[in-house]
Image 1 (cartoon, rainbow, N blue to C red):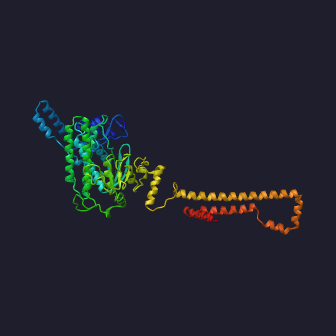
Image 2: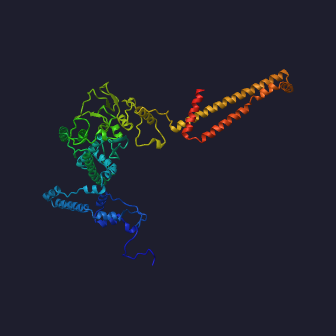
Amino acid sequence: MPKHYRPAGKKKEGNAAKYITRTKAVNYLQISLATFRKLCILKGVFPRQPKKKVEGNHKTYYHMKDIAFLLHDPLIEKFREIKVHRKKVKKAVAKKNRDLAERLLNRPPTYKLDRLILERYPTSVDALRDLDDCLTMVHLFAALPAVDGERVEVKRIRNCRRLSHEWQAYISRTHSLRKTFISVKGIYYQAEVQGQKVTWLTPHALQQVLTDDVDFNVMLTFLEFYETLLGFVNFKLYHSINVNYPPILDPRLEALAADDKASSEEEEKEEATPEADENNRKSSNLDESELRLAQLQHQLPANEPGALMHLVEESTADDADDDETKQCKSLFKNLKFYLSREVPRESLLFIIPAFGGTVSWEGEGAPFSEVDEDITHQIVDRPTQSHVFLSREYVQPQWIFDCVNARIILPTEGYVVGRVPPPHLSPFVDNDAEGYIPEYAETIRRLQAAARNEVLPLPGIGDEDLDNSLVAAIIDRTESNEAAERKKRLEMLEKQYHDELKMECEGITFSTLSNTRADNPTDAMEKDDTPSVNEVDAAKQAEKDAADISKTVMTRRKRGLLQAIEVRVHLML
C-alpha cells in the first residue's frame, strides 16, 4: 500500500482539509452567493491562496476555520428571516392583499452590527488603525446627490454626511490635522488621533454621477459596516473630550437649516423642470452640510469663552498638548478669513479652524459679514473683484494648503489673484529619499529656517557638501601655488637662457667662464650654497607627503577643522 494512500471515506488531510472552495462553502452554509458575499464582508473573512490548490487554479478558496466561524453566526438566521419576509410581502402583493403587505412592510426584520464591531476591534486603537478606508468610503457617499429614486437611499447619504461632519468637527476642534494635499482624485487629509495616523480622501465638490460599471450592492455592504464603525469611533472620541454624542446642535441654526430645507422642498414642488429640481436639491444639501459643520465646530470644546456646550472638564488644555499640536493650534492665530462663494467652502471650513483661524463665508449663518474690518485674508478664486478692501489680502485657496503643510505663514506675493501660483508640493513625499528636492521646497525650507532664526548653508550644500567645498578650495589653492612655482621656474630658465645668449654674443666661452669661477672659489661656493630649484621642490614635496600621512590618521571632524584653518590662513596671507 502506498504511503499517502487514503481509502474512500477516510478523513481528509493537508490542504484538502484546511481549505474549501467558494461553491462548497455556499452549499455548506445553505445560503445564496449574494448573502455569502455580504456575510464575508461584514465578518472580515477573505479568500486565501493555498500552496497547493487541490481542485484547480481557477477556483476561489477559503479557510475551513473561517467557514466554520460563519456557520455559527447569528446573522445567518437574520438573513434567512429577511428572505422569508420578502417572500411574504411578494405573496401578499400577488394576492392583492394590501393591508397585509403594508403591515409586513412596516415591520421588517432588522439586525445590528454592534457585536461585530466589538468582535473585530477589541480596542479603540484597533479601530483607528483600520479607519482609512472607512473614512474614504463615508466621505465618498456623503458627496453623492441625495435624490429619491436613485440606487442609494437618501437617508444613507444624509447619515454619511452627519458622520463625516462629526468626524471633521472633532479633528478641527482638537487640532489633530497634520497634512493635506489637493490631487486630481480629491483632497487628501492626514490626522493624528491618539497616536495613530489616519489618512483619508474626500472627493471634490462636483456633481457626482452614478455609473453602471460599479457594483453598488458590494459598496453598500461595506458602507453599512463602515457607518457603524465610524459611529462607534465618534462616540469614543467625543466622550474622551467630555462631550455627549450625538452632539446637541444649536436650536437657532438647526431651525434655520430646517427652514431652508422646507423652502427648498416647496420650490421643488412648484418648479416643473427636472433640471431646476436637481439644482435646488444640490444647493439645499450643500447649505445644510455647511451649516451643520459650522455648528459642530463651534459646539465642540474650545478654549475660547462662550462655547455652546457645557463642559465638565477641559481636556484640550494647553498643558496637555504636545509641541506639534501647539504649533498647529497657533498657525492661523489672530487671523480672520472670509471665503468667497467660488472657493471649496467645506474643505476650508474644516482646515482653517483646525489651525487656530477664524473663518466666515457668504451666506446664511455666517459669523461675520464681508465688510468686517478685522478680516485679514479673503480667499478668492476669481481674477477680478467687485469691491477690494485695502486692509486685507486676497489670496488663492492653495495658499491655505501650502501654509498648513509648511507650518508657517508663507508670503502671499506668489498667490495673488490672477497669478499662476507656485507648484503645490505633496507633504506625503520624502524629497531626501526620492533624491530630488524641488526648487520651491528649498524656498520653503529657507523660510522655515528664517522663522526659527536658523542659518542654512548655500543652496544645494549640506554637511558633506560643505566638507567637499573646503577640500575643493584647498585643492584650488594648491593648484594655484603649483602654477605660480612653475611660472617662476620658467622665468628663471628663460633668464638663464638670455644670459648665456648674451655671453655668447660677447665672445665669452665656457672654458673662460670655468677659469673665472676657479679664480674666485668663494663666489662659486656662495653660489653653490644656494639650493637649486629641484632641491626646493623636493623639500616641499616631502613636507606635503608628511602632512598627508598625518591627515589620514585624523578623524573626519578634525580633518575638516584643519582644512578650514589652512584655508583661513591662506586667505589671510
